[in-house]
Image 1 (tube, one colour):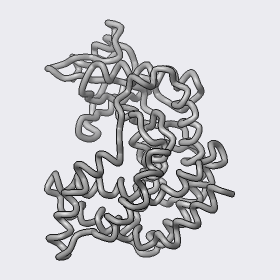
Image 2 (cartoon, helix red, strand yellow):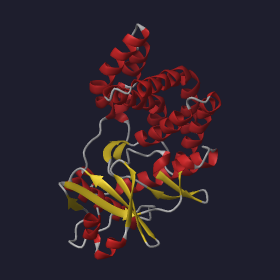
Image 3 (tube, one colour):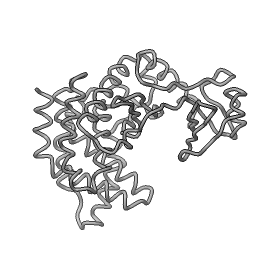
Image 4 (cartoon, one colour):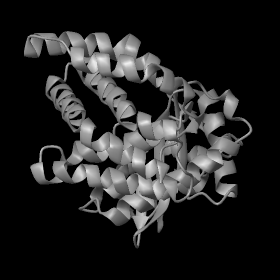
Length: 310
């Protein structure tokens, strides 16, 4: 790995490297810390690099990719492609210990500001399209429905009617733009209660902007779902999320109506993803989350719509 790091300069000969997680390494060079990551394709790296540089110029809390001595934002090593960026000091959101109202408002208002910048990025059309509804309908739904039928002796007919009958037309009317697509607490770095860094822009796609907000909501629900007290606090957390987002970039009435339905689609994708990997315990947890949110809809839906409208 030292040979790889030297592509960013000979000073990295003295660096200490430690595996952080699969495909991610922490690089320590004296008092400076960097993150080394594996990437899939060069074209995606160029898109990410240009976007991060632009977002940095817009004042977003982003850590841009560093260029190698050869002038590229990636390095090739043993048939792999790698990127390097400076480590953002602070505490990841999932390590703060609690998801308070202040956390919800800070995260949601930061997301709203990021969305406003992403919507103005002129090269946005070069990114792939992420069609959440199509992904859920073609990949997730058949797999999850089959699993539910085997597990419970019946399919998810009520949920199918709810989504199919209520979401199809509103979904087409949802605002679309570049979205982060991995906006969860672990990718938010906090210092003194404020977000100092947003991480992991390698999944940016064109899609419905509501996805990011719902994805953040489901990530928080997933972390606390096994705790009855935290589970019951989640609707209040959602209210604070929407209030925080609306304070910067008001949601449309259609987005208010579709919020719960987008959560359904996200949970379908996660359930199918884990079924595809053979991880049935995690699949069942996400299916349980899906059914629990469905049980909350009669309460949650009017509250969300009132917040958005008011």
